Image (cartoon, rainbow, N blue to C red; front, side, top):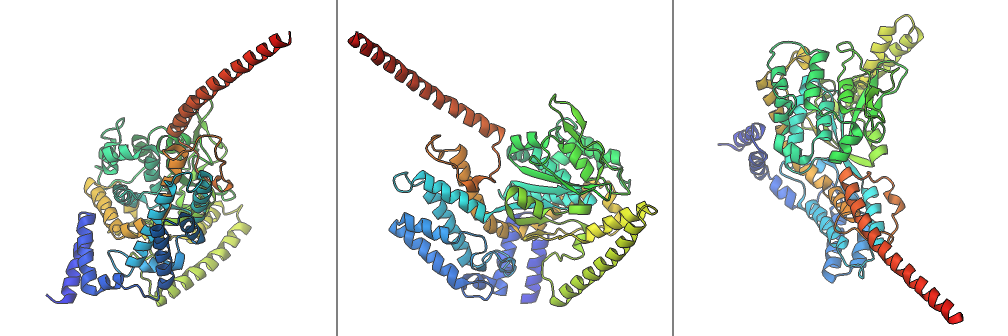
Length: 541
């Protein structure tokens, strides 16, 4: 078999792989045949500053070998960020299929090991306050990763495969956003813990509809050829998503999930609903509003829980529609709220996919043509939107339509790592049709397969941030937590996420124990002082 034929066979094996292990086996064989295995081992490259990475790697190793902990801390302070020497460039992860430069992987692992070692050093070597100052500052500087799930109608089931694969590898970020169809998957992630996800699995959850609605979704997917209605969507969401508010969901899972909704009126701004901005809004209500496709489904009034535990309208004068219309991927808002600066995008939006190649290999000519076309399109739309604004009172529907089209084309549809699953539905009406069970499973599997090639980039690009999060959690609620009053919380911690309900209970119990000990000690001291005062009075008398 010729090399070209063998490469085609290996690519076919990757395209139809049933698991990540099967895909990785074929990917490594493909790299060996194309010479990319050697490319990974070779340090020099114009794609990144290999000399700087090598210098820093050797320096960190030297400090660890010499047990120069202050020197190690200083070296980490010099430059702990995700793109040191260009190591975070996406092009480094597009050369070989099975990974990037071994030097980059070694450097990331060395930082990981150094962070864990420093965190566990005794107080007399590095004071706890110095550790806290360093880790909180590093966490803010390095940033966090977020997963953004786009809209896409029925193609939203592709997200299920993407999320399932990330969960399987322990790579699902804590910060997640969802728009339109992506909001249903995001809401499920907000409501179910990792343990529940492992027990139920998302595919089974969607098929069963959860414990209270078993069989609902199976019935939902069995109606071949029929179009989705608002009632169908509401039934699916009610069967799949528990009756929780954003705040209640966060207290349960610790996931910071956001759902985007767009205003039905042209003069309002879109909203990002989450436990910070709208803690009392129901997940179901937010997902239903985000799925309300303009012109297909009616606009939705949001529902929230009041102080009595009762449901009531949230902003009753407003109605909300499909979140992907205005802000499919709310990266800027997530950055402001959760200190995110690295974005993993699961893109299934058919409009965006036209401008986002699946393999991210854009030829210069195509890229230029696309940019020119988008620029001309925006200018044309700006002209007609100006006309619509001028005569908006006479043409309200036209005005609204132009506003929506302009909002769709004026968005950024890519992230740092893009997962773009394949799909084979040519008829646009299929996007709002009820899928068969076979189509559902096909979509989920395609979502998994699209994620295989992104597992290694996600693992490496998020490794340091995941380690920092883990260490800070240990300092705040775990085995590294110092006694109250022995340290001050650094200013750089101001954007840390609030504790979950479980963390609050553990903290309250620990505080009560310590308060009890302190109270008994104070009582003993008061008794001793009283006795001393009495003795003094008797002696004076």
